Length: 118
Image 1 (cartoon, rainbow, N blue to C red):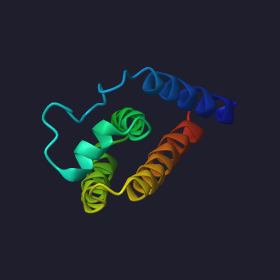
Image 2 (cartoon, rainbow, N blue to C red):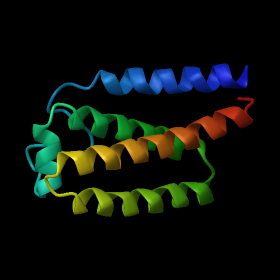
Image 3 (cartoon, helix red, strand yellow):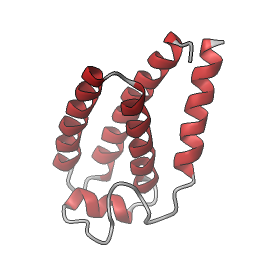
Image 4 (cartoon, one colour):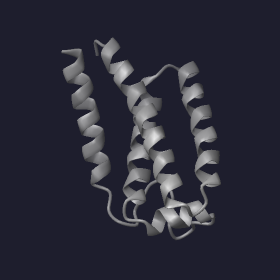
């Protein structure tokens, strides 16, 4: 049952993030994108939805954990943002960075769901 709940939570997150419209990628305001990586994300049809998915997963993960763990997730996100920025306009690098962070945050959410009950 716990695995089923984790799957349901992840399905809801994926569904929510997949509803993001092109050029409406949270949290990057594409009208104000200033760095090479931000501009690349805004111009790339595959990276934009990944940004929205990541933002959703980050919001879910930070809302489900205790204060101390929330700080750890936020610290990891800040470190990840530096990694993302170091990719510049390299789409392959950005894709790899997003995939890794999405896996990480999905793992956090799965771990929380597995501990249940809610």
